Amino acid sequence: MSNRGPRWPVAVAVAAATGCFLLAACSSNPTTKPPAPAASAATTQAIAAAGSPTTPGASGGNVKACSLLTEQELTPLLGSDPGPGTDTSGGTTSSCAYTGAGVVTIVVDHGRGKSLFDTLCGSNQNVSGVADGACLTIVGGSVAAMYILKGPDLMSINIQAGLDTKITPDALTALGKIAASRI
Image (cartoon, rainbow, N blue to C red; front, side, top):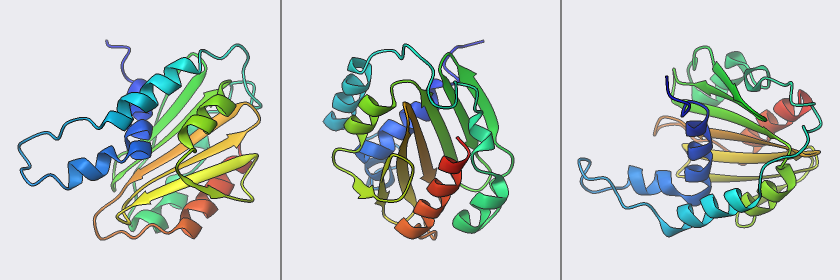
């Protein structure tokens, strides 16, 4: 069995933060993969430069990502039930993937939150009133990412919904507040 399971939600977070999903969705030839954007490599390098966490975050590293948002809380945003989440953990990271209606991933990095937050939120819209800091980005109404800092923990909520879904900053912020209250 591969150890790659917990890494794909982080890749989704990086892709959402850098607009990679937009390139994939707008490709004129669906059989040709678009080239990876340069920003993706820069973001990946910045995350690697942040280093490994040395201590667990505010939650003590014990929070399970699937406990932060339920499928019932995600259903109104997605327009249909995303099904149960699949929870994975590895070291100081916990992740959850809902893959029924669209794809929603929640990743919590317990320990290097501030450095990752600064890296990922540099070019995204800041949101006030959520934990110790939050930012979000929405691409085309159906692809969104929100990063939430709470103590040394960084949570990312990444959504790739159907093309007819219109995610709003208010709806995403409301979900972020719910999730942040549980970490």
